[in-house]
Image (cartoon, rainbow, N blue to C red; front, top):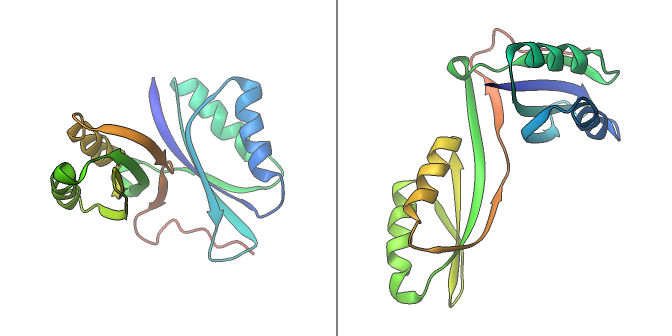
Length: 166
């Protein structure tokens, strides 16, 4: 099994995300993460999908997504030529006497404490999936009350393959 990250530029129309995710669902393809947001040009949306499968399945995914009406461009974002980031918010049960330990670990990972209550705190951390996983492993002795992850947002490095749509 391989894992690929696809960047898809689509028309910013209602239902486009549903049509793309529906294609995956109908074909039985797995989506590990999906993010979507408007681009610098509000006519278009950038969708980043992380999926996995064998080489044949991944080629089929790329070809079938490219055929959809609203899709303007699809390309694979290879790890060595791209920048991937994910945002995660972690609510941790933490009494006042143990709070400083969590804050120290969050500081090492450049995390931000975005909420503190009497019995918990919320840490915001941004980075690669590996960085977030490493942070979560260090919280092993703490109870994670809630976890929210955005999925990967990614862009290719440099300006050579930037797509300018009419």
